[in-house]
Length: 256
Length: 236
Image 1 (spheres, rainbow over the protein chains, first blue to last red):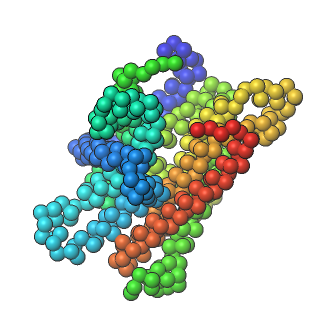
Image 2: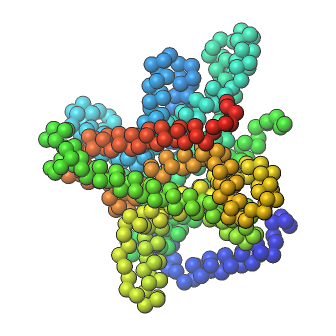
Image 3: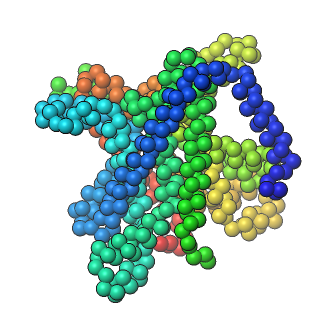
């Protein structure tokens, strides 16, 4: 701490504090209390989307990675194609393809209109969650492929020598070791996923970004809501990074 | 109309509009990427050899840019940037100008890419054997000559994986400019889809175009890698 607080840092901090004071006093923040509830629900929706798309995405990514390493050729090729498609096109395009493209096909199919899912399919969020999940699965499928391939073959041979079945080997040795190897990368990817979530606002899902857009439209204030938005994302990213660092430190590693 | 008629290059087909959008996307991606590289070279040198104040400012720049969603940055910088330039123009007594969307787009992508480039290049420069730079200094090379002859060529092999990744990100980040109303490929596609209701066809076509760009880029990256890594021992 003492090393960190040098003279120039103190001066920079004072300048930064001055800047913040100027922003707080000179800009308009009177709208803030009116939208307190909206903002909270926006943050909540953003976090819920982040949580579920990451969980669903990694669940898909594990087989995607595993099949690319060990699967039969056609299955491996199909998984590789999926990852290439997802990684080679912008997420915004995928989102709009699913929402406008697939979404506009559904109403033309009678049995879908009569099914129990129809009330949900008329809303925007399932398309947003689907697009974000597929995106996360595509990127993480590639990460998991590398992680599965990187587990030393001696460990897998040892498991076989112990008489473990293929399933037990996967459950006890291969998957835990692969996840361990992939964890630092996955932590970074979750932050990237957080930064992708505001895209769902373009298909009318009311996440944090959409709430800020609404405030901007209703109050005609241009910059202040955007600055607040940037600040909230900055805090969310910081919290995620610190949390992941904590979990990474909990897993014992052999230090060379 | 059939799919082929809809995608025809001349009106009433929409193929021409899509290709024009693709050209726009690529222009912004190129411009933004190279602007980002320039910022990155400056930023990396500032972080490594600059004074303590410059280092702290650059640290703040890279941390903040990398922690905020690209969409938010693009909306904020796109409007705030043009607004700021106009206010400065008025302050100095000239009339406000309508800032070209293309220029604003390149600036925005450049500023965002610059933060990531800074980190990639900083790591690459740090990976150079310090003896090589010391040897250059011992020969009496000036800072500029040292940069041109030693540092930049020597760091290139270390920087290529990161920089090629950034190029792929740049091509895909241009799609976000659709949100601020800049007619690049994604927005052109949405306009075509909205006018004809053939959303699925147009978005799939645009996806294919983006995919071709990515795959061609990968071929190019492979060629650059082969050249940059020549004479180096095979790894992995």
